[in-house]
Amino acid sequence: MQTATNHSEMSAADALWTLYRQQPKRVQEAFRIRLAQSETGEPKSLTSEEAKELTLLRGRDIKAGRAKLIAHKTVMQEMEQMLETYAD
Image (tube, rainbow, N blue to C red; front, side):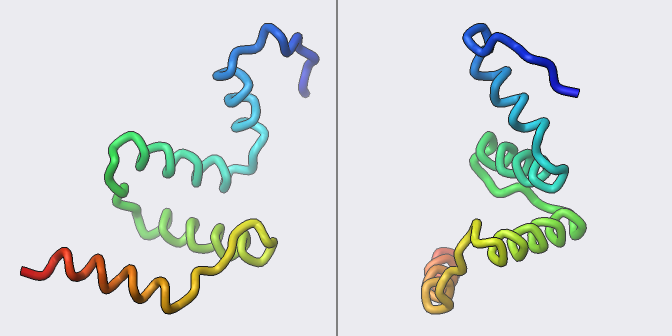
């Protein structure tokens, strides 16, 4: 059960922690993955279960209108550009 607090005494970290704890487990997991990626500067290698969960989360977000689809042409252009960086 939540208790009332004096918000003027709450730090930004406490406020973020409170918001994080109120999120569903799937949102918390997606947040942890993004945070880990931002700290290392490199994409985190995901397990197949993590990848599946992120895919399902993205699908739910698209259906709910919280995320938008990326045009196929845009995705293909980005993939081609990425592949060009690997070509020698």
